[in-house]
Image (cartoon, rainbow, N blue to C red; front, top):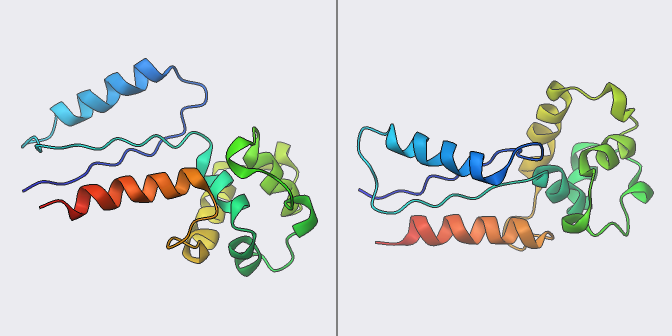
Length: 135
């Protein structure tokens, strides 16, 4: 049996080599090693994916300040979570991990996964789809 093992981690403060080593160590701990493995790293991506899909943000948070997110090239943004917090009327200095988790829980169900507005989300979906559809 083959399967894809996507790894989605926030690695902004970590060196890519260290993350790669951790991924391969995790793979080595599996009781049975798959023939193919796909690793995809999301680096500050989830909030960028949300910002790219303004409709999803508004469905989850109808009072979001849309004007703060319009015109942002989501995959090019640095500090995406800070921008999202600002649009949701939360001071970035007060954002917690629980807030980010809540954003994901509320916004993700509304993301357009058939035609993603974010190129990196499109690549993420395509990579996983390719792996799970292989015989």
